[in-house]
Length: 258
Image (cartoon, rainbow, N blue to C red; front, top):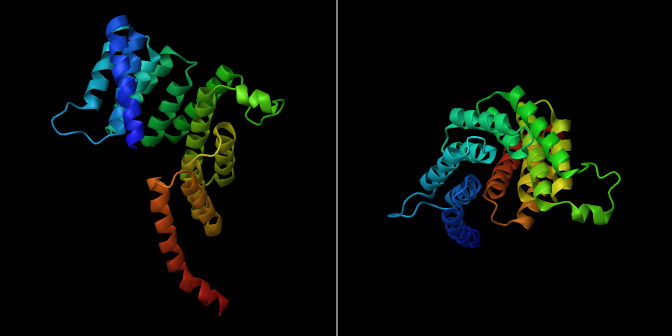
């Protein structure tokens, strides 16, 4: 966590200088995004101004320079999500999509915000749009057909991360709906294919397996998540909860055996 903060501090410092030098919508948006990430990776230090408040200022500044900056709208939406303002976050995401229909991040953010306000059908449509935009942008075939090992390595990191994130979010949506378990597992598998092993996806797979009673597989997924990131809090918490669940079900198992 500290390494991430240090890296973001360096990025914020450099982008502040660049923003002053260029004074463009793009430079303000880039600084706003870095400040938002710094805000999410810190507990506000007493006596210092909020990174989140400064992020909002820079993103509004970007929109004052260019209302068509879809990335700025998308970043504002993410900032509002972090503040728990889901309705306004969704409005900002809609603005982003209206200004750039080919931006995967805009559609993905719309999917997240729609899911948060229980507009599940709209969320699914937005995620599908996000996938289409991501795949078109990177010319990436999700099932890998026709791609050599060298081709895979040449696909840009940003594209992989974009597709992996969207598939993971789609898996979460289907898992939470409670009826599309096969679809959810397929989405998580595609997320791992697109972005490689990731602790968050393995944690979400564990939650899927827990929901259908496959506790051994759930434990295996949580172990894999913690091997990749021993500090992943959600996986640590879910492993403790799984241990409690096993103890609760142990008497039931004994009764069935007798």
